[in-house]
Image 1: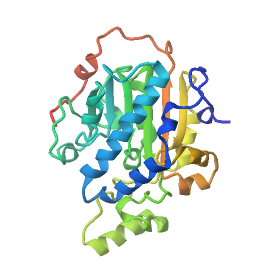
Image 2 (image 1 turned 30 degrees about the horizontal axis):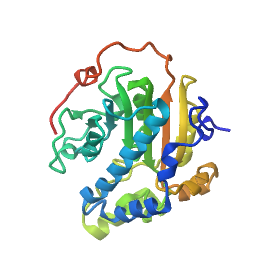
Image 3 (image 1 turned 30 degrees about the vertical axis):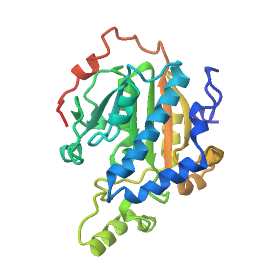
Image 4 (image 1 turned 45 degrees about the horizontal axis):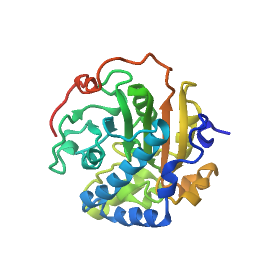
Length: 289
């Protein structure tokens, strides 16, 4: 059995705290907001932001026994910073990283300390942040598992990494070009251009890539021994449907978004004695969004 499918080996938690939130009502609420993803991103991301803060906070408390208050949360592919307010409410210092300057300023938001940089080469030192997250970004990156490795690199030993992405063969894999992505990404993109008169924002082969659920499970299986996989589950499903992750084939079609939660074991690397704020000082190209 994959380490990813086992309970926490530390014995501190047998069932993730977040599982109690994973109700059918929650699933329906989040799925209902998807229709606004292209037309009104603030509505869509507002609900996802609140849910993400709850998810991260629950897993961080399971892991450390503490809240997110006073932590540094690095959001890889954070765009204009839709999640900033939600993490700010719980006392975390939120730091979005985004490679595309147009995305950073797309919503007219301003996030102090926002950083322009690539998730595949994060401009931070090793063991820099308490929490590193990425939400619905991996499918837009040509080398998503390089990004996952980078996220682990910058996370402190004993810290938390949450990696969530849209599964290609799920109903939302094609983004605005779906469901035609089931006939091929290139076909779906060409059809969208023919029907809409413009290229899709999420262009297959350029800004949208086919990432499978099995890819995430393989990455989890192959992580080094100093990394512990805490949980792998379908993000938008109720708790009673999390078993879908364990069924090959079926998970590719029905697990619309896969979450991998990991930590670097304390003592796996020499703890850095630098103050918390130093993570911001190591950014290669900070700018105010």
